[in-house]
Length: 240
Ligand code: CAA
Image (cartoon, rainbow, N blue to C red; front, side, top):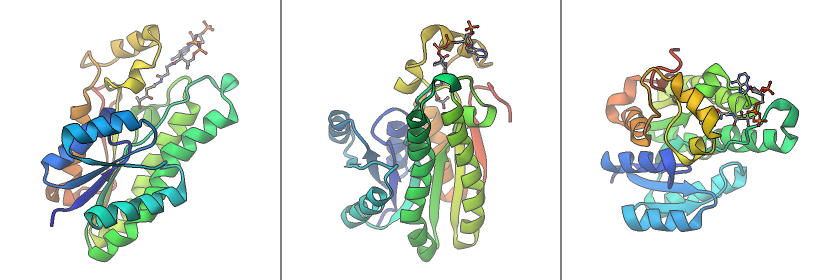
C-alpha cells in the first residue's frame, strides 16, 4: 500500500504543486483546503487527487479531518503544512484580528496537524513532516509582524519537533520559500513587488514547482537523514 500524504492548502498555488509532486513520488495524496470549493473541485477533477475541506486553524477540525483522510485512504505518514494566509499592514494599522488569524492559521495549523498525525507516525516508525516557512520568517519584512512572527515560529517548531521525532524515524523539516509566483505574492502592490524582485539575485520570482521539488526530496526515502533543517529556496534573496 502506498504511503498517504496530506498537503494543507493543497489545491492551489505552492500547495497544488506539492500535491502533484508527492503524487509523482507514488504517494496517495489528500489535498486539504479551507474555502475555495470551486477551485478544489476543479483540482480534484484535473489531478485525481482527493480534496478534503477543513480549517487548519481549528484544532478539532484537524483531528476530525485527519481521521476522515485515514478512513478514506489509510493512516497518514506524511504531512506538509503549507496552508497560510497574509494580513499585511504596518503595526500601527494592524488589528488584533489580523495578528490572531495569521498566528492561528499559519503557526497554529502546524501544531494542530502535528497533534493529529505525529503519534501514528511514531508508532509505525516512519513519518515525514515538512513545514512551509518563509524568507520573511528568517529576515523579517516591513508590514508583516504577524506573518514574520508566525513563520519564524514555524522554524523553531520544526527544530523542536525534529528532536522528538528522530529516534522514531519521523523527520521534521522546513522549507523557506522566497517570493514565488502565486496569488499571495500577486496581492503585493506592484510598485512594492517591483522593488522586492529587484533585490532577488536570480532576477525573477520563483515558481511553485521549484518549492515542490524540495518538499518531494524531504518526503522521500532518500531524505531520511535530513531532519531539523530549513531549506531556503529564494533565488539568493537571503543567504542564511
Ligand atoms: N522599508 C522601509 N520603509 C518602507 C518599506 C520598507 N521595506 N516599505 C514601505 N516603506 C515605507 C514607505 O516608503 C512609506 O514611507 P512614507 O510614508 O515616509 O512615504 C511608508 O512605509 C508607508 O508605505 P506604504 O505606502 O506601502 O504603506 P501602506 O500602509 O499603504 O502599505 C504594506 C503597507 C501593506 C505593508 C505594503 O507596503 C505592502 O504590501 N508591502 C509588502 C509586504 C510584503 O512583502 N508582503 C509579502 C506577501 S507574500 C508572502 O508573504 C509570501 C512569502 O512568504 C514571501
